[in-house]
Image 1 (cartoon, rainbow, N blue to C red):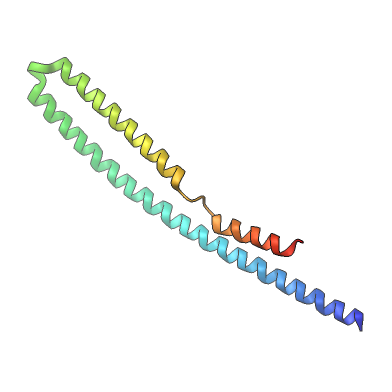
Image 2 (cartoon, rainbow, N blue to C red):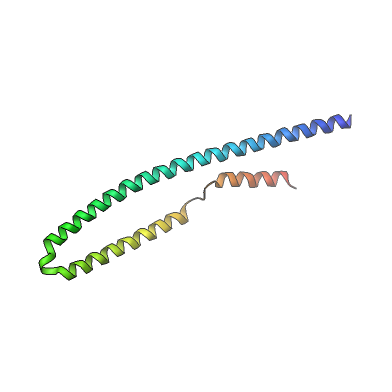
Length: 122
């Protein structure tokens, strides 16, 4: 009789383990899909923004050069260079702050695995 109960217990343990692995695999697949969608959407908007910003800066630079070249040639080039350096540094700072605030990918899966490990191990 104890052999039969051991067999049932091991079957239940195996079934529970398979269910647990299945749940973790589903969660991982869902997070992977969300991460893929989020990344592709960000990349698309980044590309559009970069193209528009490039065109705007190109046209503004051309306008400044045409309007102010004769009286302020050297000063204009220095001021424009300083402005673009400052804006570039501001963008780098913002990107780094966003990276620090971002939740690491697959954090929910890792938390679930940690919970499972704590529940299964004494």
